[in-house]
Image (tube, rainbow, N blue to C red; front, side):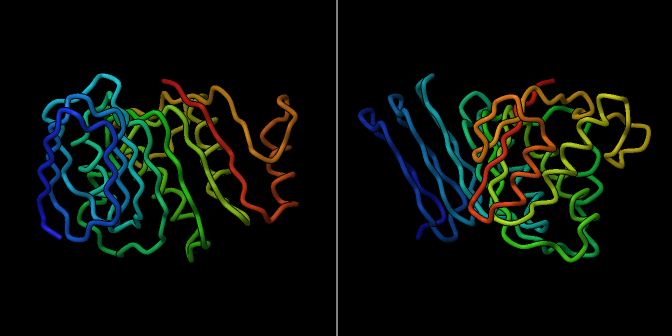
Amino acid sequence: MSERINISSPQLKILQLRFCSKLKKVNVDAPNLLLFDYSGDDKPVISFMRSSNQLEVNISTNVDFRHFYSLREFTRNMPQVILASLSLSIGHSFPDDDPYMPALLVSSTTPPSIKHLVLREYSPPDSEALYSQLLMNYLLSSCFPKTISFIYHGRFSFIEFFYEKLMGSEKGECYCSSGDRKCWWHALKIVSISCSFMTDENADFKAMLDASARSFEEKTITFSLEL
């Protein structure tokens, strides 16, 4: 597979790229394109020379902590108004000495916004507390999701951590390791919470967790967020 792909077509409306190895650059000149789907482990720079104002871009990729710096650069290269969804399968390995970690943990400016962020979790980390703190900081340094869904089978403890920290931020508590510098996501608020395994629209978060623990089927919990 070439490291660069150039696509030009005035008639093209749907474009899908799947697992293009070693891909570094995608240039798309398709003024009538309505849907662009990308799936793969590589995170190329994707440029739209001309695009429709109805274009939606959906990205699905695998990441672990070694890749979060490239993930942030990847999302910043996407036009903010068209990145509709970002689906991540999260790995847990991360180096003890990460030169990018300080830059990722301190972020005062709002990153690119996306309509929907999906996280898939498969196995528990060795160091759960450290993992949860780093994952939240790294994710919110990469993008501002209007909604975020957690898809899981067993126990996904990061969901509880995420909820508790955002609820704490509404009380002025700091959790982002930024010192005196206020990070943009301190202002995030949870608007609503829904799940795939309960029909009661009035169920609270604790009731969702209790119901989730009784099922080993694939489950989804979704948070709607706002600044």
